[in-house]
Image (cartoon, rainbow, N blue to C red; front, side):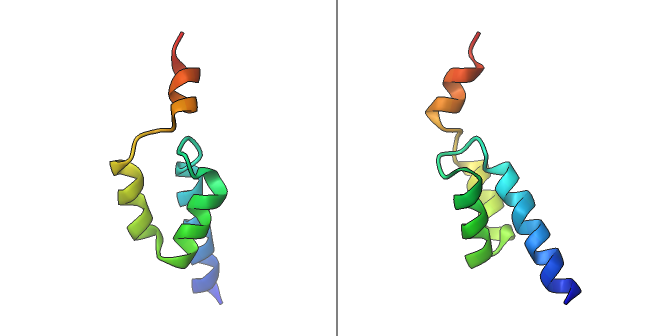
Length: 59
């Protein structure tokens, strides 16, 4: 039971890392649930932020 809770917490943390990406929190969270956060995190590092996130950062 504790392992399942920790898995969901790590998936949620992975989802938080994906907020600025094209899939957003829910898409990243769902992908992490289906695969594993260890697979999704490197994918987030390889992909860039969404164009909307880049546009909002510029002064």
